[in-house]
Amino acid sequence: MKKYLLGLGILILGVLLIFASYDWFLQKQQRVLNGTAHATFPYSDYSNDELQKLYPHVVENNSPTVQSPEETHQKFLAALKNENFDEAVNCCFRMGDRERMKSFLVDLKKKGQLNLMMRDIKEIYKDVVGNMTATYIYNGTYNGKKVGNTMTFIKTNGGYWYIESL
Image (cartoon, rainbow, N blue to C red; front, side, top):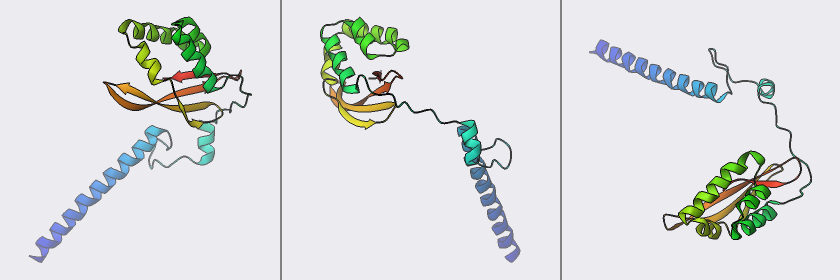
């Protein structure tokens, strides 16, 4: 009987060791996929120096502000009130986003949802503002219910804050 219990104990210990090893492996693989650990066994984490070489810091945008997020927001709303979508995208979005956003606004108008969007984003509240990005909160409507949402801005090297997402 003692041999049976000893064998069962060793078996249970072995199974636990296998599960623990597999869990360790999965955690290390997640760090490898995130880019913070070496891809070869024993999957050790990169040192700070190695991380600096692999992922150099983005230079901060310390250019003086020419147009604040609030000013961009007000210009955007004014252009939307006049249904001047060209002005709305030219004043308030980066060059690469303008056509996509104009199409989005035209579609909203066709669906009769432009006024709803303008009501939703009428008031924004500062959440987090950095040197390059800013996040503002507004209360939106989704399926007839009030929901919280964010509007993010990005600062150009010229000092203009443009809307990155609504």
